[in-house]
Image (cartoon, rainbow, N blue to C red; front, side, top):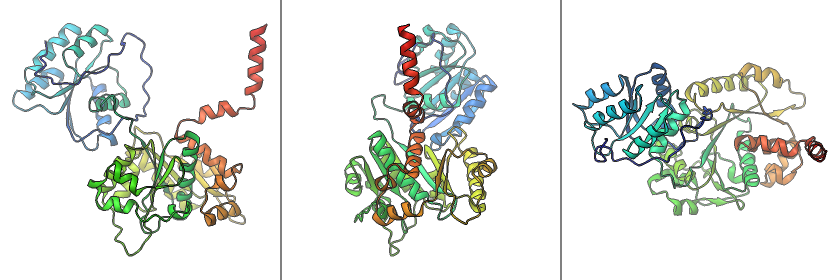
Length: 433
């Protein structure tokens, strides 16, 4: 049997492997993996391909990962002359008895504290229970999904009683003046109002940010103070730096001062956003229209990306480039959400919504018509669109975007369906018949 000394592992929660597994989604909301060494030894080429794709995911960007073929035999031979990493992912094609025997040989060459995820090809409850009793962190049945691999690795390093980590939404404009900041602020306002969960708007346009103006706030401190000393940021300091806009919405404002040095360090930005997402369920990041290293990292490592574009050629070209880059860099995440803004501007020739979406190969589920009076009034008064006119089409558009980001769009369609009451009465008549 595998000794506890060889594997000092956190036991996983038992699940019924005999039940028919639900299809794994390709999208994962797993926590980012810390800076650990992970080595995988596979026997099946398809499994190796899936693990390699998982290793390229943004959530494993801090981990040092290697993969090779050969399974248990290769692992045992390798670790006779080398120390074991933080986590070993081992695949076996053998049945229960032979697999346990092989893992006992692996245990003999493992250092204390090494964690192990075993991949097998038999949906065997007895094998799963026995592996957990002997200290294996997780047993996963092939064939695998990329999201399944990421979730399994994350579960090894996540306290099951820990508070779920918040989700980061990056809002970026396809070009300057597309209205990305307005979309970010109004969508965050809608999320806070719809879900009644805490939302923080992080304005990363340090010299020219408009979040303070849009919410009629002028805080003395904000996100620039956190970025200067990210190692000092904790829950207490975060509460002091945030400016509260409503019961569920807070603002991490930009200084909007040209006298201050506004270069942003990528690691400092990541640290600050990590602290924020540990304290609130949603973080809406207003990313300025630039492609510096730190801004690129914020976008690529966010849970969701919203691109705001206007129906013109420059926006079309830039949106197409952004969508192409994001799909390659984030293969395991949902595609970015496209918002077409300032549509139907009077006397302006523009690309139709159909032609625009066809060219960028991405559907625009939110289209916001140009309304100079409504948006101008909101901007001048320091209000959100919903506060000025909650029954307007733009207000509906922002609520729709909030529902899409929070996976509430299907629930909303069921609630607001005109046929809902008719169908309910029909079901009642059938039940009574």
